[in-house]
Amino acid sequence: MVGVNTLREMYEQMVTARRYEQRLQEEYLEGKQPAFDISAGPIPGELHLAAGHEAAAVGVCAHLDDEDTVTAPHRPHHVAIAKGVDLDRMTAEIFGRETGLCKGKGGHMHLFDPDVNFACSGIIAQGCPPAVGAAMAADKRNEDSVAVAYLGEGAVDQGAFLESLNLAAVRELPVVFVVEDNDWAISMPQDRITDVDTIAERADGFDMPGVRVDHDDAIAVYEAARDAVGRARNGNGPTLLDVQVHRRMGHFMGDAEGYRPDEDSERAQRLDAIERLADDLRDRGVDDAELQELRELAEDRVEDAIEWAKAQPEPDPADAHEDVFVDDPAAASGGDD
Image 1 (cartoon, one colour):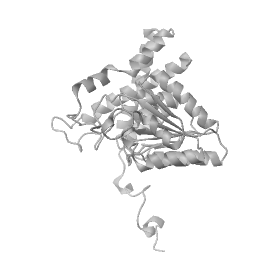
Image 2 (tube, helix red, strand yellow):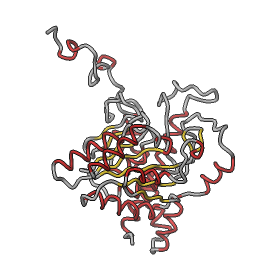
Image 3 (tube, helix red, strand yellow):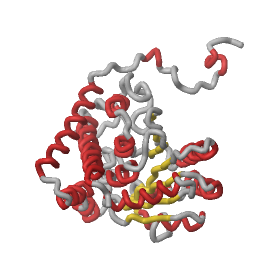
Image 4 (cartoon, one colour):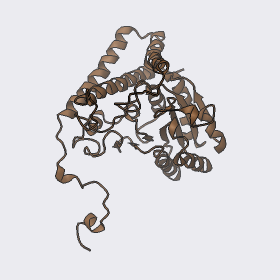
């Protein structure tokens, strides 16, 4: 059974992630309405939010520590929060400020925090090879660290994912692949692009365990991840963990979701893993006053991070070519030789 203190921490992280996405949505839409202008407002460009995915993040990351590696996809904030990424600096990065994790140059899809071994990418399934690499490094060093690669169900037909499964299986590497299945690969329903009943069945072709968590219950994810992470940490190889989640927002901010039936959107709003975990905590003796206190702590943390980030300076345009790859070797070395 999961301890009540662990459940409290998971609940606070889930509420933090949900409130964070809500506040980012508000900030992002400033200046972009009524006619949606993706370049306007304090957060220009695309923004992918993960409200409804929180259980998949906290249920797995509860078993990890700073030395374990996590890679996330283009919808990364909930995983970053669960992994312990610095919330102030992550928020500053999203707002494009020089004190951000990547000095304001990466934005929300390219976050990197080496202090807790977290990174994400906007390229589909491209977190899988680095996670396998981190797992291989841990294996060669005889360390008990594990790696976790998050991806969406729309990424499971990519070569990067399938080749990563193969190498992890062949080398029996300490890596867990976590698929957040929200039923929609952008605007395409999952059953039209992948001909398996569950993504967990993809593990069969690589002789590794495949586990399906068929509803986004934080405790169910925690228990499945306990086995998967424990198997990896004990040298028993990789696992594919397939978690059903529910996308409460569009694929990206500004997505009109004309492709999505109303009943599907309504179901996603109704099936809330945060409320389910609150009920579980009440069953363990946690009263509504304490739940409210946890929610207020989470909301204060989010507000503090956003206010701090907005007060930070913007990058100096003269620094645009620093910390980036360049094609000219002479420019990279600072000379002509």
